[in-house]
Image 1 (cartoon, helix red, strand yellow):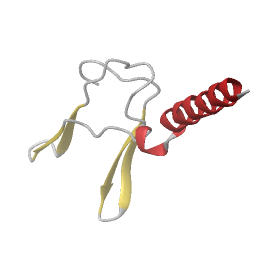
Image 2: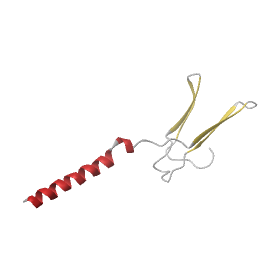
Image 3: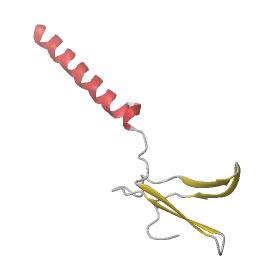
Image 4: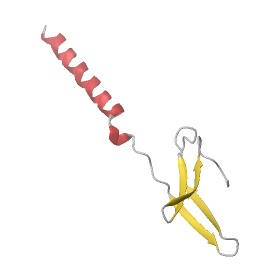
Length: 88
């Protein structure tokens, strides 16, 4: 009887630790981009934004959107379903 209680408690502990590690919110935080470079061309009045966000899982882990504001007003919002490669 003692053996079954031990196995039962061990299994409960393993399941608890597994659930804690899988569903803990601290592991679900998004990673920040490695760099964000802004270049403004005064002649054409164009803002170029380059975001470096390396990931191994580009189809699942990507930047959701890029929002550009000027004086509190939204100028541009670009939404992404996957991580683009190259230049857009």
